[in-house]
Length: 243
Image (tube, helix red, strand yellow):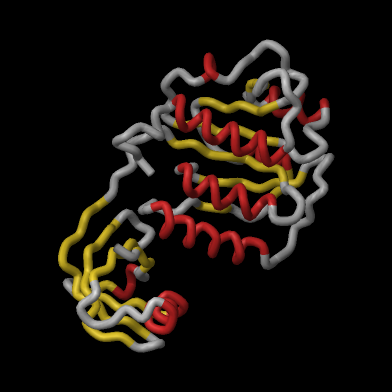
């Protein structure tokens, strides 16, 4: 069954209206017509089974047949990610959404090669929405505006466990850190890695340095690997998954 986003403001009792780009895609590309069944999510945890009542390129009228409310009881996992070059950020935001990461806080650090642009957050929001539709995730990942590293470690996320991945850490591995936590905030650096000064500042704000092993990974590989392992160790990828 095809899955689409519906603005919660356009849900009224047992009826709803899909508009904008979603309506154009349904009507002009997919050519779904009256009587077609669809699944809808509103970004607030509400999931609807619905049937199309009327369709044009501006809006799709639907009848809501049933509603399910999603409640996320899993460990909250938050990612602080140094700004990377090119499409690497787009890729990681897509994968973070699919893997169930709760928030991403992009930041600029000493060795960042990536550059910020005002249009980036709008593009990232679109990537998140499409990834939610593809993966079946009811609650979208929240992607915050790009910030400075110093703000991220000082004000970023109030979690009960905070870690920073560092290629020069030789003792602390990831698995022993993953006893059951309510929330985890982890940082992954840029292509050039974190500076020693940044590592010391992070430690002074309660971050534990952790290694991903003996190999030196690319920044995007390290971020993808860390997300997957942390979600797995916290049972967020179990069969009864909190996506």
